[in-house]
Image 1: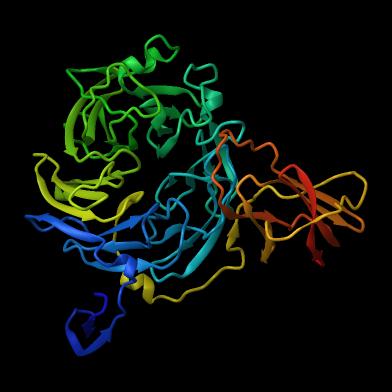
Image 2 (image 1 turned 120 degrees about the vertical axis):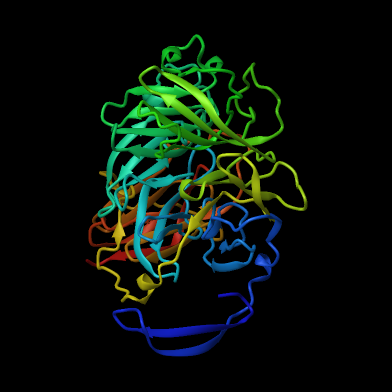
Length: 513
């Protein structure tokens, strides 16, 4: 339906042969869009019918997550607030949505540890807690399968680890730490040296394909052995390193990608050659974090399709779709059946045609621009989504075990009871409870320990090992989730180590079961 419009809806009752037995027309008057969503999408070029269903725009500066149609009209939005990446669509027609105001500290930018699985009517089915938080990517390992997430080692480094999460329990099945795998590599020289922004799994080869943006590479890794199989990158990046022989050799001249996003394998057989595979990526095309001497100073961004012969370890550039310069975030959507390619330029370096985001729809074969849309704000990604009316007509049920996953909680300590302070902290810290989770709201990296002083038990929640690696931190507040289901029955007073000083919190917590 359209916003602020008296929508006329025709209902038909069909028999088993799809013959109309009865019909009725109803009118539904919809509300206006929020002011922040007015005029956020404009159609700049429209030459042919689009291959999109609805494009869902999400993340970063998006006022609300919303979906628009080929005419640029918003047809759905979610009023839930989020911090960074917003929503990740799932194969079952639901999506995973960041919890509002809930983050986990990191070496620099905190990440979201809590996500809700919900449908497009806003009904929640599961709540997932991810122990080190999530950045950039949640991807299903297979259709309706476990989750692969981009997360953090938090061992002085961030955005350097992949985890497989059991979808039914939320438990961590496996962690792959790129910092450990590439130990000794000269590029491990800063906290965010890798900046992994995508991960996907290929069942045929038991491998994952990751996109460590800050080393300008797509890397395929065996998921069982953790062995690096090959690297898609400008060979100059890896010259003189122990990984030089893993780099695919170029066939012909290639205008290489730099600081790319969304590196995925395209399963369609583009060249009718069973010996090759195809890799597509969004090439932001900049070298902000790691200069490369062969960089061409091209001021455009691209979506690029590579053909890789894994046996010969060669690569050639099949297609290059040129767009306006989008220096960070961004993604692509490939629709092979319609022969269309969407380039999602989510973060323009400068305002262009009054827009800070731009979406191109290309003819995938000719690289010709068919349609183009202007987005008024910067954002993270856009996804092509569809609604299943039958799904929403079904009964909604919330299971008893909808809370899944484990976060690190307070640890029992053998120490003197009643570790308390002489002074009380007030405005700097706020505590709230939901289910068995305590949410402590404070300034990022403001506290390092929370001490639970019971009559018979003492527990300490300690995050002092998560060091902030930058001198000028972001002075903002968020809620950090602390599970209390491991505490013994008792009444606890609370002390907090805040800004390297011990304070008493003027609240108590009673555990009675």
